[in-house]
Length: 120
Image (cartoon, rainbow, N blue to C red; front, side, top):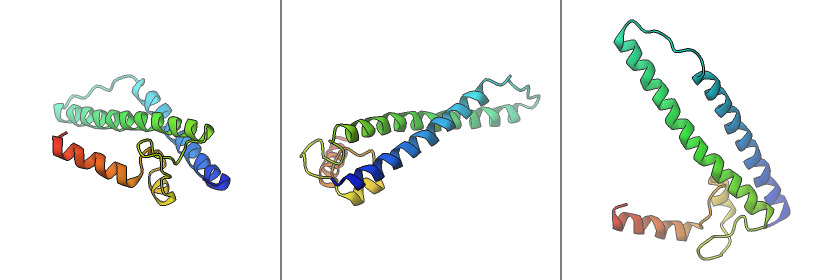
């Protein structure tokens, strides 16, 4: 992969990582506020549902943060953009769509087909 492509993806991943980390900080700040007292059980349930939804989103973002950090390591050791299964180059188009990917489209398709067949 060309140096300018690697620089593009490094900057893209760095920006996304900083964005996710700042969101995580705001969630922690919001969660440490004193609990509100809701006299109406419906209001309380709505608040809990919103909080659970936010926590699920943050959990997914936490997993994405790990993937971004691994992608940045791969950029550093010059294995970014190489499929972990077949060791062929992953297309730039695929990397732009999903920069944390570790599989080319053919290997990912085979993996998904196998998961469907196994019912995973």
